[in-house]
Length: 324
Image (cartoon, rainbow, N blue to C red; front, side):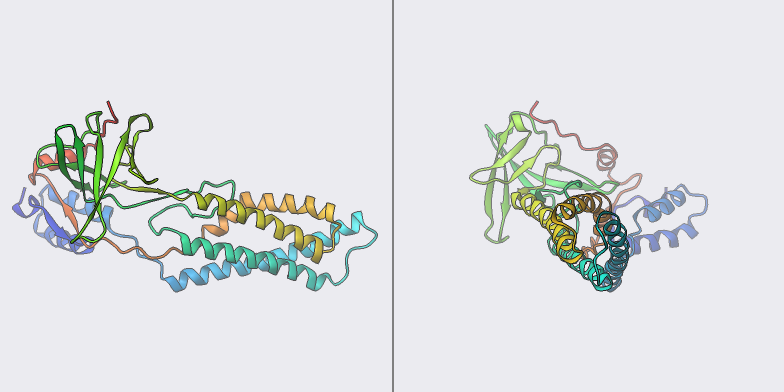
């Protein structure tokens, strides 16, 4: 293989693809052509959606939701009240839009809370509906270096990242990979100011497959080792509170604005709340814009002939032995 395809390169993704396509023209008949094309197609980043367009899309979704809900509430109130009461409520032309406006305003507030509290790198939102999973913890980026404490002292490990879907990482010394067996008594990381870092010690708990912070609640799970997980119990409480308030908004809107009897309003609110929670809510939350994530400035690429030991370790997934 040509020399320029056998050494590691640190470049941004778009620049690397340009360089590889340029070399492709001069490498007719070489093995590097399909590899270069495949790599460029794999790592080309997705173009971010402008924030103004994302916000406009969200506002359009809420507007469509308001108009549709006002029509449905007006038609539904006339039909149901005409069947169970002597006559439907008067002034439905403003009562139905008012009820729809109250519900839409609450839904917009809920979306705003999710936008403000959401982690740009997370897939889930912090304040979901009751029937969708919401994380009750925050996970940090993998720590660049750690220290493993054993009976004979500390060992310093650095992170090695491997590009892929999903990306993988493992911790190694110059010639040895970290194995989380029972000899590892604790994990030490350094946080804070790089000039005066603070050591944080995570003690092993073999029965729970994690390392728990001394004097704290954070932990390092074995399954996703390297990331510090911070429990957020308040998120689940806030999520439940938002769902309860959502039901109360529906009940008050149907009872006070659409003028249903309170018992009928309670039953209708329960049915509509269930449909909103299971169907409409997740669809609306999926349109919430995310805060932009700063892209990685460089990647390290290895091909055939470039550090065979690292390439071989990148091909196989890192295996962490949990307290064997």
